[in-house]
Image 1 (cartoon, rainbow, N blue to C red):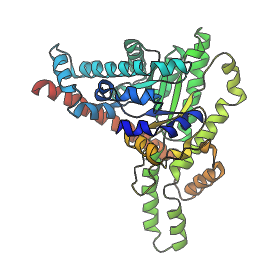
Image 2: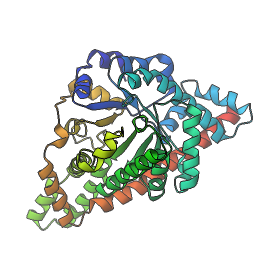
Image 3: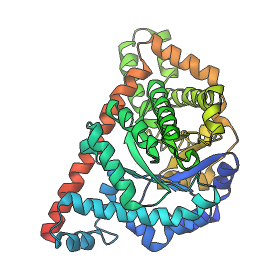
Image 4: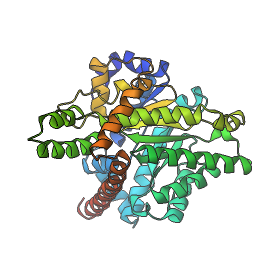
Length: 385
């Protein structure tokens, strides 16, 4: 990312903030921390938070840059295991990022300026171990503006209310469907009620729910293309199917945004809000355009809304700075059209809740693979460098 160019064109990011949306960086590395690039992005209002995951750390460490090989060698001399080395590196990077973002956290009254770190994917199916690991990481980093990432899996839904009830900030990830979102919002609210019963100050507990957008289109477009091929002798049906390409991700997320407003803007949450509870902000994730035939800000410009976050990879940040057109409240637009699209997809046998289940399974597997590759790399570097 050309930081200086992005900083010189920061207007659209400031618009995001003025319209109630926080731009967060979907990346982290020691290079960004040590070079001052992250500080520049924060000080100039380009980003107000950071997300990370095993894939991001795997790419950073395997780049062979940023001093990671040297750091791994030094830690290995202490007879640490590959996991212990990974743990030391990631917690140090996250703590450094949290300290850079602390002024944002303080200025926002504790509602923004967060950095996220995920529990190890290899324990994602063990609720008790995930809970203990999340508590350990939060205590180890010891910064208020840290979010512990938990996947919206069956086991994750058990962990979320426990962590919230103990005053731990949580970012729920790998959420792809309306069913996923409703379950996640319910888990947060149950956790907040328990935290209140446990005597916690609710205003200090924060959570975000991360809905993934572009991956939905990737899978649904594949299903649609299979149906289009099968409908070669049925021109009218083929046309209807073709018109649905690239529309599922946006429609799905707009429906979830509407549900988000209904849950946290309704009477049901008002009693908790009056006792200091924070809205669980909706985070739009997977916002880079995977299909090069689609507009590169397809998953950014239609999703500006109050109390939301958009996580942005480096390239998407550059696209916003170069030609982004940020307008207020676009996430609330075309709700009826979104319902129509989902209904039409269902008529062709494409159920987005079912699509979401497959994507979640694939997402967990992807993070597990990245994590395993990372640990193997640390092991190899320890022996070679």
